[in-house]
Length: 111
Length: 117
Image (tube, rainbow over all chains, first blue to last red; front, side, top):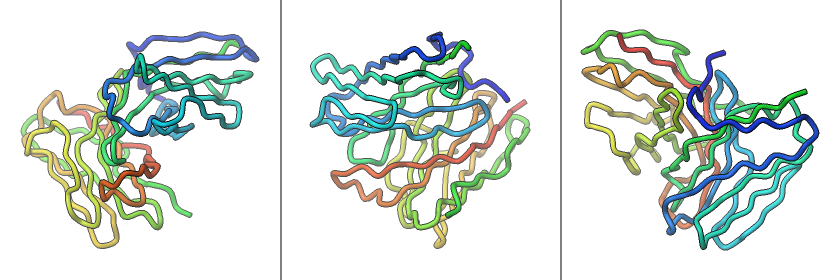
């Protein structure tokens, strides 16, 4: 399939290690922050979201951390697997209609 | 439950032509948002339709227009195509979109890859 992220920053991790993907957001008034995973040839797939009144939320193998002081969002993936290889985007929204996406990070998992 | 579908998958047009892209929303969803994703970039919001009315628009010129039908499917039309319009066009459906103080997850389709020559 065609790559969606030819010039994006790349994070390479060994299978089984933990991954941390970072994102800086722009609008301090945003009330939801979302992480999406996009595989080659596919649309973005929802991973996890967090509301602005929280600083941490956990899902299955994933944790999102929100630091509103420095407008920073991170996605932690535990025990990274080859199937986690994709481009990861953070997105922010206020009132839920328009999603504003960050630049994206390529995650490569080495077996 | 049927997910979001888009057609066509790929499309090649020449500069100055017009194009129509189609999206069928997920069952039960009444809101459709369109995004443009240039190669190597994140998606950019074009506009959103809620119950057949435009409900927010991004920084795109008027030659980008849309429609939503009573069954909540949607079309994106682009007139006078330019080379920079080459991109992956993504449709996302969700439930809600009234601009209230809540967020409803947007489910994305696979996209239409438009190439303008």
